[in-house]
Image (cartoon, rainbow, N blue to C red; front, top):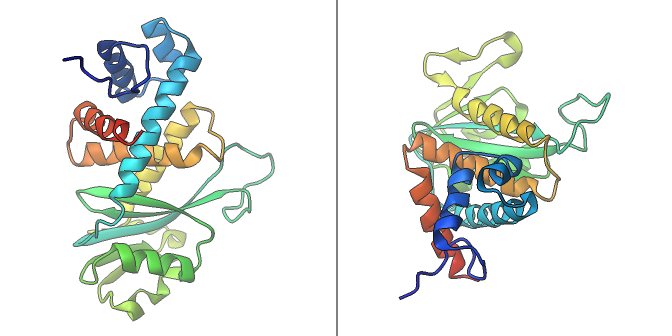
Length: 231
């Protein structure tokens, strides 16, 4: 029985060669680096990489209904597809706003949002985080309402006063995810706003595999097999 290619059902590549492309993706090689290793065109690698990112995005979105519990960190971040000279303020209109929640010692969840007001952030927290969880945030005013919506344990760190941690009261892990994602985007000289959601969910997937100590290659092959059945 002929084995179906999980990378793309209409691909003219063999299964083994397709797995080599997946292997380059797992190693986080750029399309240019992978094309030199596999001796094929960069645009071809880009097409396969985009397909893999679409599969990851689909997989991560299916898991978005998972409820976080125990100790959870929350933070808002600002990303931009490219640098604009003279634009530095975090609330600049052209930046992409991302809200992140991290279940300590486990995984992270991200969502692109229109603004960082309480009306936007609180419903996401209520939907994603169990009420008995311990919330950790900074002093952004949108989090003032967390105690009023049943989260009795809410710890905050005052970054403006150079306070970054008080024992286990911190948001260092969600900030480490933000730094990790920005470093990855820098490697590509940033990406277009249209492709940003795919790269965001890819970073989320990679970070979660590392935190959960999962084999990324095996997890990715399973995701691609499921995604291929939908096409």
